[in-house]
Structures are given as structure tokens and as C-alpha cells.
Length: 133
Image: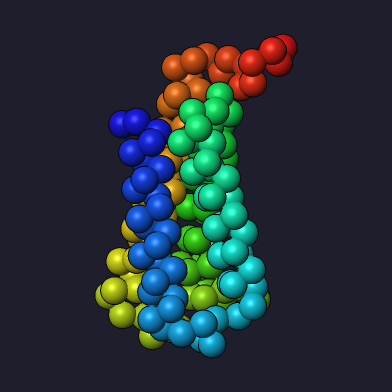
């Protein structure tokens, strides 16, 4: 699978998940969840830009951003309440649509991370930026 396709799938998962937050209302989540989602949005935007531009650092960014977003969204939504950045879905009375949106983003983010790692491995973790030794 190409990194562009995987990143496109992540964009769809991200939109679905955040559309579900709009549907549920942002008043039901802590400020930490909003902050985490905002940081994820910025990282995904940078990743998307690197991938579209075919920047040499795109595979490394995909590995880091993809796996970080998958881990972060899982921690926020699938681990019982552990602090302000928590929106544990069973406690929130989430429906099937919410679970679908969250799992879609986690799966897509993990996919991006794995594709990025595969590209790095295929290139023997070659220098990420031309001229960098």
C-alpha cells in the first residue's frame, strides 16, 4: 500500500472521528481531550503536507505520527478514566457510530505508521533528508 493512500485513509478516519465529536457535543469531553485532538490535527496536517510533497522525511513522519495518534486515541477513548485527557467510551454512553469512528481513526493511524516503517525498512533507514549524513 502506498503512503499516500494510507494517509488518505487516515484523513477520512480523522474526519469521521471529529465529526462524531461534533455530533456528541464538545461539552461532554474534558479540555485535555480537546487539546490532544488539536495536537493530533496539527501533526496529521504536517504529515499530510509531507506526504503530498513527497518529502524524504514523510516515511519517518508517518511512522511517528501514525503510531502516536493510534496510541493517543486508544488511550483517550479505550482506557478507563485516568485523568483530564480521558473520554472513556463506555462511561460516556457511546453508541455504535462513536465506536466505529474511533476504531476507524485508530486503525487508519496504525496503518500509516506501519506503512511508514515498511518504507523506512525497505530503504534500510537511509538518511531522511538529502545531504544529511
